[in-house]
Length: 478
Image (cartoon, rainbow, N blue to C red; front, side):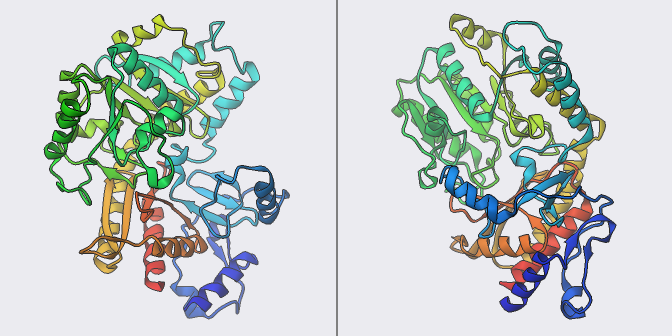
């Protein structure tokens, strides 16, 4: 079995299988048996050919990375893919091979790789002015702030721009502490909020080596419907937050920070009715509620533009990044005028946050989402994809859970459904086989056993079918 896979991999790497243009895969006669070729899922047609690539090879890049880049940077695959070009929901390697991108949407890309409208906005602004954020007036930052505020409920209409989600979450925590005069922050045990000291403290993922102990940070039980001790009873999990406030603090808190759907934590959608109960407890203790929308925002969930809306709450502070700029380094914090006023008591600025190039890109992203109806596409295609994945769960015992919303889905692999034993070795094998067949997906979760399916929002039903067929084939092979 594995010998056949190795043969196919060698054929792909020697350009006998090439994903380009309408043809999908081009095949060399006699490369392998007709039966073997016919059983492979076929990538959907895509009328596009990438420009020729003449840069360094994957091996050359890998050697340079090992010598000059931090050893903390690691690739997903045992044999890393050299991605040199992108177009909408597809990526191309150095040999012109096409891959379906099932993960890049949550990494940065919302509208699709190199969307022409976003690219044009970046180029046009760069040709006029690249930077003037702090000292002078420029319409780009104000236009995007106005458009962004219009997408948020209630009195959430004051925008602070940053360069990343980490910066946004750090700023949100600082604002909460300054506004309330309290120091204690409550976050969830399976959370991920960034890579700076404060956000690492709120992350609580010591087994991933993300956690940095910070004073005044308290980690509540994770309201995980699949692995949590209270199943889908959100109100029972919420009582743990009440206990933390009562016994772990002075009875006053600065704030509560959470994702509505945990991304790095394995696409865990918080148990129903959790956030309304927690928000009430936090506000009674004098705190503010912070919604981390870095991964679940910007129409990704399909049913709503923001992840927190599915739980019927309105936060006091919302943070965002990643898809906000479709690959451009950009983040934001949006809050109420009352909370925002606290920063006038301090000297806060961000040199590059909200620079004209990034905010021009952000405004273009919002317009593309609306014009191309990408939220509805995320709802329709995401529902279809989730249904197909649930059917796959009925077929393969290794799938323990399928969860998420819209185009933010998780597939948790287990070796024993009753015990929920993490299949963290098996997931690597499936992931490698899927890569060999032209599908790239993410991986995460507390045990590293969850597929994170978060494609660009232009993902369609043909793409969904191809992804599921490839996953089905790979799971059958292991």
